[in-house]
Length: 102
Image 1: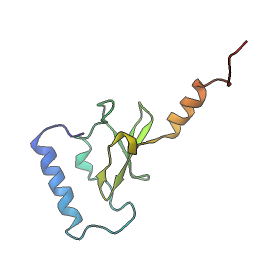
Image 2: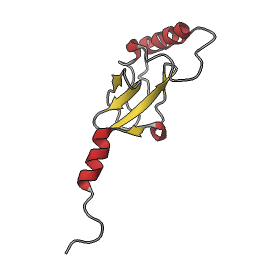
Image 3: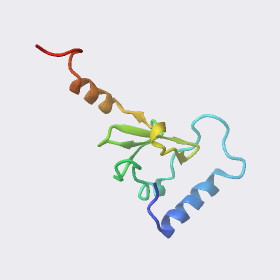
């Protein structure tokens, strides 16, 4: 989600303009415009995100999820997020053996 402000609009316009009219072909495309990061927050927790350049994702460390960045545009729909390794490990630790314990 974007925090309201002229700076966010200007950064989005610069990012859109830097891709050119033709855009990019398939694949992940260009990374996230660094100036956008200060305006983007997780739609679930409303907390800042960390940009992982190697994976081209916006990461929420607190929730253990990562949003993909496709052609320089973050896909911040919660259903599009994937669990990070940290989240997967936390789920394994909290789930005990199947069935009731005696």
